[in-house]
Image 1 (tube, helix red, strand yellow):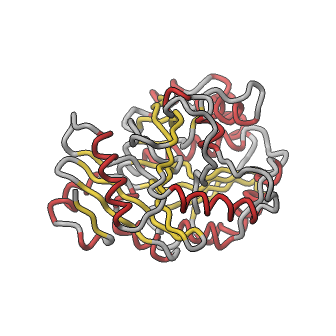
Image 2 (image 1 turned 90 degrees about the horizontal axis):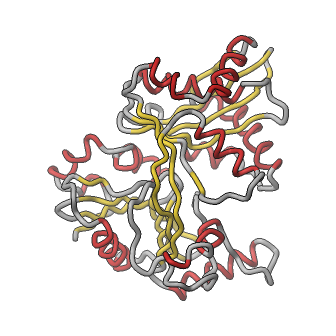
Length: 347
């Protein structure tokens, strides 16, 4: 197993193999990461490579896996590779490792806290007619309605951030989740002019819905979505359909709706969001979300710090991984609810 902390340090033959990889394996994304005060680590074998975004959490060190391994020798054991990769990251000072919802892991490291997840993926090599046919009839009606209502679509970058952040924070507030200031979103797209894009649609000059996307030729990711409290009917459907067509025109291979949780509470907002995504006709690719603790003691310190930060010192810190993992003891050694949990989408 090999490891380096810079894209430039990768051997030439590895860089050549990464020409068809997704955005998270590119030098431009590493540049964005460094602009955020973080690092990229690359761990590879003869068969595959794993990219990890590494950041400081308080005075501790966490790795975020935003992509599954990029594999060039098919048929190799992903689990064996991940087990070794976790140990390599430990040698480089990483104290725990988590997945982001953009990742699609077909397996997970031994000893990790694990839950099933997935992503709806659209094959953009299909014709426009085929893609439209795959969309649920209710969505097709909503898209037509949005188009006929006179929505104006804007596609851009940093110049749309202020308007996007306003509706993004409004969206989070409706779910009781604290919003983020513009610096967070600016950090996500800084230096990614050709690989990040914001969509906003308007009705009579008023923003109705928005979306933020990462992409390169391999994959487009629906990173964030937002809308006003009472948007024009069909606004979000129309925006996402236009986004799908935008990436198809750019000859991107696939489009990911990012994030699927199994067994959502019936009637919950999460269930509604997932139904909204699946009705665009993508294929649900099942995968795993996990947290691997290279140092359980360091991770417990992090959990304690997060409890204090939340101003709920007597409430055990948990996140989506643990809340879901408790439902799947067969993936977690039969032990339920033993760990506090990490941030799934670490900024």
